[in-house]
Image 1 (cartoon, rainbow, N blue to C red):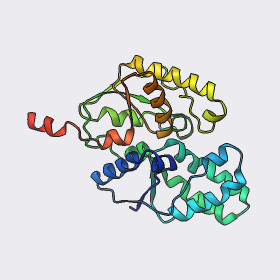
Image 2: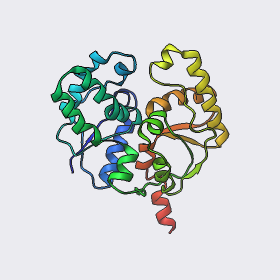
Image 3: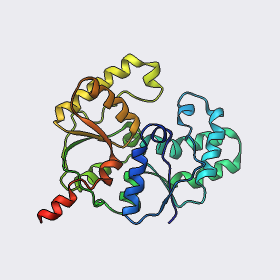
Image 4: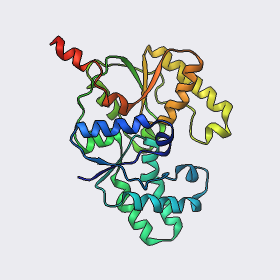
Length: 251
């Protein structure tokens, strides 16, 4: 199976450890993942702000970069949602039947990380170890657009040493929303402050999510509040072997 990593713009520019963690994790599971160097943005910022015509060349670029792969894995529910649901809208608007056909072939092969692990590879225990108290924030696109359900929590519960704590009002948006945070800054910060308060109430040491954008937003607020809670991408926790050597020696 040929598998490609769709790293996303944000991870590539600001949070490369998330992308590296995906590669580490998949290779540990025997998947030879490739990184198509020609990949660029998925086009979501343009589509979300109404620039569908401008998104057409971006979708064309996506098709060229990822055609021929059996699966495209991304550490982002947001970008996976864009590829699976928005690209077909852009392709239809372009009036190019060839692009529409190519998108229809590629889009179903795009998987958010937890979907790929649970549904495609059929694994929940990925051999991770992370001896910390963790709470999980289900991001909006993964929850509502992709419907990943409890896949991330199932993966986290199988991590050795990890204690998964409930996040109060977990399904509420963190307030980031891409350009929403820029156009409606006060509302975005207020929503994020609520989410940060719920994270503190959970008693967790670490907040985990599947989208770096949400972690950036919530993490910034937690830092300003001096909450003492760090944020980590789901991929980083699943790639972790922290404490594994010590636990093995104890046995």
